[in-house]
Image (cartoon, rainbow, N blue to C red; front, side, top):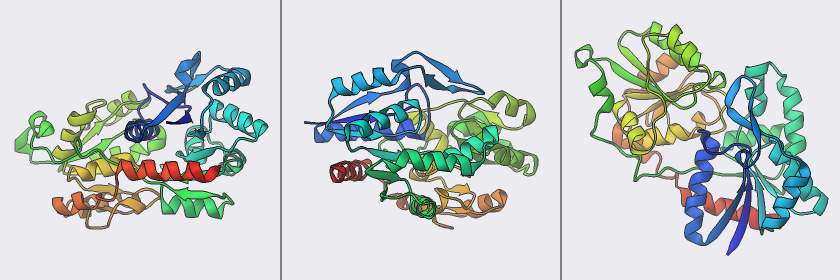
Length: 342
């Protein structure tokens, strides 16, 4: 049995694409007799990131991480994030001349600029230093690979994502239709994900002030939820939903909107499509790699125009468009990158 050490500065109970991805990867890797050991923030004393309480910052020394890695004695080491735990692990690997791999999950330069106005050029320099020691860097899309290559990143390998079709498939249980007044005959337009500033949610919410024939619904939670509820009273907020219940929300909706311009993929895009619901988004990394125009959704700088186009897509075409996304292939690419790092 091979043992992989996964180091991630985000983990359960946080709800985000990184956690969702690795939970699924680990579950599918177990079928191949692959064992994962995980180092994450909630193994240590931690505090909430200022202005972003969902993120836990671990208070842990390099010496503690060094001892833990030595005790685990893994066959391979993969660093999923560029946080404190990631930097400690990078230092350990470099000091011992141990190869390791990384993932470029989050566009931190854009993320930090949106929250704290930190210049992107500064953060990209830090990111490049962090990943420069990695034998291989997994990136989520061709567009992301091209962008990072242009910035001088090397050893980039295109990764993929999967979707659990036992959960995410068209449902006949129209949960949202039951909550709304059917006489209004409005198109149900949903957003699924964290309710936070970097998700560009204001662009989504403003649609409620322009389109009376749309009923906007936000499925998720986060630091700006209360503020949005007060500012946009026409929008329905239902909190986080998971598994089959979440699939019912996707299925009920006429269109799912992915307003972020700083994500590296968008797991909710393929979840929605697997349920037969088209996705409208801005023409940026992630959406442009996943959405097939006028087949599974539409990308445009005008979200309302993108929604109108997406609403014309056929359910079966939408479902077929995500056939290539599966977790087994995701695991294969990870294992190949780890083996080639030695």
